[in-house]
Image (tube, rainbow, N blue to C red; front, side, top):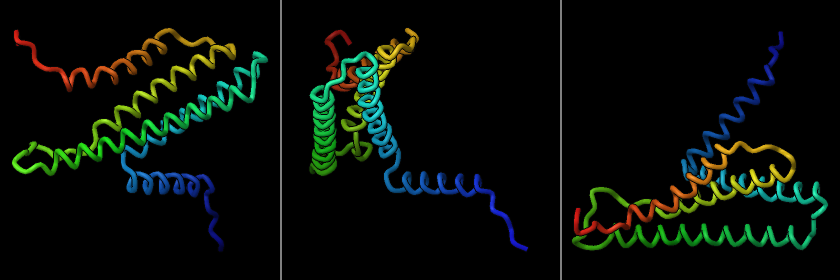
Length: 163
C-alpha cells in the first residue's frame, strides 16, 4: 500500500529546512540583511504603484529610485568594511584588551536605520495609494530611526565634567 504524503508537511519541511540552513550560514545578520533587501524591494514597488495610481509614473523617476537603492547598498558595504577594520584594530592591538571580542557594531546599526527609513517610505507610499496609516505606526518608525541615530551619540558620548 502506497503511503500518501501530506503536501503541507512537505512544504513546511522545505521552508524550515531552508530557514535553518540560511540561519546556520548567515546568522541573525543574514536575516537583518534579508529584511532590509525585502524592504527596499517593497519600497520601490510601492513607490511605483503609488506613482502609477496617481498618474505620476516616469521611467526616469523609477530609474532614480534604483540608483538611490544602489547608493544605499554601497553605504552598507562601507559599514561592513568599517566593522572589519575596527575589528582588526580592536582585537589585535598589543597590550589593549577588551573584555569581549569585537564583532560588529556599525553594520547592524546602519542596516536597522535603513530598515526604519524604508518602512517609513513604504507607509508614505501606502498613504499615496489611499490607505490610512495609523499615526502611532509613523511615530514608532520615527522613534526607531531616531533611536538608531542616537546609538552613536550614546556610545561616543564623553562624560561631562559634572558626572
